[in-house]
Length: 333
Image (cartoon, rainbow, N blue to C red; front, side, top):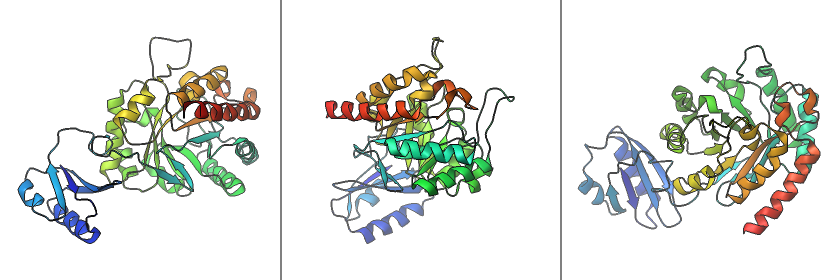
């Protein structure tokens, strides 16, 4: 059910109405719009009398809806969501660049790369500590120690940080991580999504390897239904019959997601193709398609990287990419 309040509705009355609706055993999420606020009710609303709700003097309308994307969809939230990450804004026309190594290898490595990408124009530092790998015999990250090194890089540079979580039990380790990333393999790990929904920390949700856009939005819905509205959608390539690249970069998903959802949409061209020479053109294509940001892997010595060095840009290449992104954004304004 969606309850639309009248423009300028009294906030105290809105809070009382929210408490009243909650007494029916449903979760009430308030979306603040430019013109009016909207209460989105999640749960069994059949016992709620619509005529009673519409009798409240601050209510403009109350409607039961069948759209499953009540919170993540644009139908009930026309304005773009803007998420503030340590002063860096995502969504609503803002553009962010996330860069860093696939995995944290040492304190010296992550701090060095952090300083280089910041100087080149990156807004947020990425670095993996818990790494989901296809083979158990490959490097799977430094785990808690890796997070601690990433936090050191944050202190050194002042950049917000993002890292991927693998399990609910790791949540305490991520206390100083600014954005928690849910990888493609965990997109439908609903227990993990529910726990992240109980946090207020931003969650970057990557599209699953073989998932539809509808399934991606429903995964976002699982997080938001628990009370966390700070979800960022990430297109990172999908598995198709083509094997020339690691995955197939679905550029069409970017404008489609922006049409379907109010949430920020970014692209990860590094994982989408797995080939460093393709990262820059795919990044620029994503920007031209309307992405609100990109996340790319950068390593100072890709040949010696412990993970995915073949898809990492050199710091100098990343600097070139940032410059080209600026030109593309000016061209499409």
